[in-house]
Image (cartoon, rainbow, N blue to C red):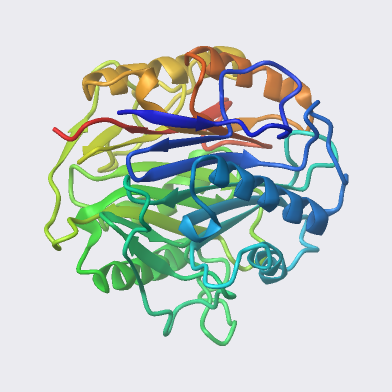
Amino acid sequence: MKKKHAWPEGHWNWPISVTHKHGVRCGEMIWVGGQVDLTPEGVVRNPGDLATQTSNSMSYFGTVLENLDCDLQDLVQLLCFYVNDGSVDEIDFLNMVGDCLPPGTQTTVNAIPVPYLAYQGMRVEIEGYAMRRKNGERTTRTYASNDGMSPLPSPFCQALRSGKMIFVSAQYPIYVNGDVYSPGDIVAQTNHEMEQIGKLLGQFGAGFDDVVKNNRWYAGSSGIDDFEPAALACAANYKEPGPAATGIPIPRHANPDVTIKLSVVAMLGEDGSHLPRRHVWPDSLWDWHVHLPYKHGLKCDEMIFLGGQVSLDKHGVAVKPHDLSAQTHQAMKHIGTILNDLGVNYGDVCKVTTVYHGDCGPDALNANLPIRSSYFSDPGPATTGVPLPALAYDGMMVEIDVFAMTEPD
């Protein structure tokens, strides 16, 4: 499908050369890579200042959308990585982001607290998606009722439908009055959040069979003891073949009693019909240590979703353990295999989101960003890269999420 890429004049840049662009427009979708407060030379501005960096990152975000003939009112989802050692109230942070949006904007959101970001002094990185019709008109939107759901500050909503796409905000295990549901119990909180997601999908006439992507952000470290309980509880809501999925551990959520946040993307025909989809599971690919209903690749209409790709074997054991560069190559090769099975290639990718094992600083970023960039021709897809102290399996160094688009079958 025809794409338009955004690289606004005077925009921030990485200090190394890559094929990635700041934004991509394809069909009705607009994908914006992680926006940060850097100079055009790749130097962090306003180091350590979360509020100012948030405002400047959202300003950059708006500029990218304008470069693609859209604006912030076209937003359908924001994914915000922000540095939090426990001293930042997440609602306060969401208010910082919300204050940057024009009146009348409503969008879904996910805020992910992390211990650090790619460069010293960087406090926030914000990626997201917007939608507008090919003819330039805004898409028709409907919004789910927030009644009975975890509180979200305005202008954020729990779920919205735009065209065929349904986006659900990250669900919290928190009652309307602010009390945490089953503090510290990851299985109970997973079940509670999946119940909330089911109710939100139901407001649009959709269900778990319509989900195309499932995302888990759970408090934990490397190893199956942290990974497995919530993975199985979440997976129990899906029939096989299920959606593409990604599960990422973070050291902690903003509220220490919260152990997990879940979000989904679903698709439903604009006439309310359930859309057919194709799933792929290439024989050469890896598997989890326990059976899950998810598939590596899924195509629904013109949209292609991949589960987070990693360097594991068929038993969930890391291949080339602790070698970030080698694992990045392996994950990118898996992505190519999945895309090929779906009849597309790297040129059809619109957005790449990568989490990688590493400390704050350029060394870990430079050990994976140029590698994944090298698999794309210039102009390449939008991208986001976030370092973490641990990933789901021992010895695992990188997990790469990909969204692509092509003509419907």
